[in-house]
Image (cartoon, rainbow, N blue to C red; front, side, top):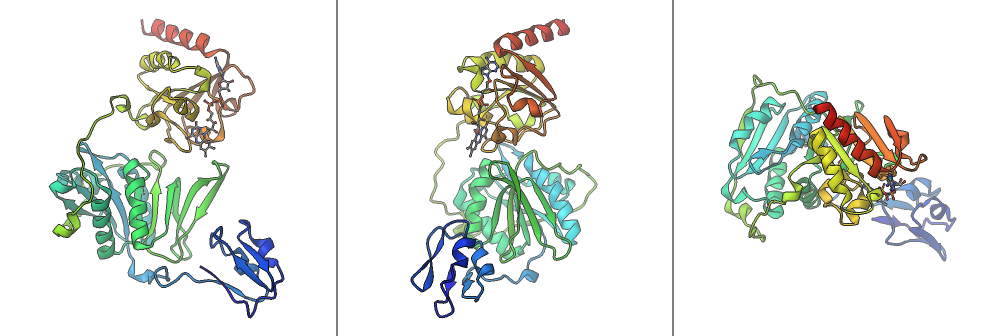
Length: 396
Ligand code: FAD
């Protein structure tokens, strides 16, 4: 919290003008802080009489960083396979661990997951911390979080990484809050600062208009979730050697307040748009859900899948797992065809690393043309059928 020493405060108002959040003001002869304070520290730095300080409290006190050693990734598995993002985490985790000269561990939780340990070692892990139990077959936040907390407490990694997947986004904030550690969500770049070994966590901010680099100087471990498909996966080396250590699972850790009644597979969500090479994406320009039938035809000809802008998802034309962008998925297919999508920055951040972008839009000034490799100015309902026809002719 921000502590104001009214004995020292001269009510000069410098803190008030230096606060970007309108959180501090001079009332009478002393400054007063309100609930908008983010503890950014700007007022503390600018106070000419050192009347302000931030008290990070006992629980958030400077951890003894030397006690923390190593990089740990959360190896998430579901429906009989390790999530692809785990191999991307191992790719970046290996680089960070090598730079720090520390081991890279993967914590693997599940019902029957022992078989995946060798894949994780081949992809870069030095050791796999195996938490295997029938109670872990179904993902439940409270049990998974308790086990991760125990592992972090026991192995004291300096860095913990997880995928920014539905599971990672749900369990890792739970863990970070419990252990009072800092967490940066949805990172797109991670690196170690050579001078002090600090993890620099970069992610888009303000709608993707700036890249913010965040560090956690006061707490350990430094925790981050990483967007799938942003980091390169490690090249597997089956000859790599590593150890598999069993995590102690006392009954108290396996107690959950959640009961999973049934797991239902969403048939509309069978295709993971992050894993296909050709995406045909539709936006508000489709005008109705029926437009996706046409896009599906084109996607079928290309052996790909359909994706969407948030406007199309919000309109209820297609389910959320197809959404690309800041609040959807990041994709980087070989081919991305944007149909009736304007190219708002929040959409662009999710698809601009695609190899080839084709934009079809009837407005020649649409921003999507700024990032398109090829642009077609025209009505998508005229252009797409012709593309389908041409592809069918070529195939014949
Ligand atoms: P519009 O901007 O309305 O564009 C429709 C386009 O279709 C127009 O360019 C028009 O010329 C063209 N068109 C119309 N009819 C035709 C036709 N017959 N043939 C060809 N072209 C046609 N958006 C996302 O997509 N993903 C996100 O994750 C996301 N996250 C967001 C997060 C925040 C915090 C905020 C504030 C916004 C977010 N948005 C996101 C919304 C984003 O700002 C845009 O509103 C949205 O992307 C617009 O979708 P659109 O391009 O489909 O629609």
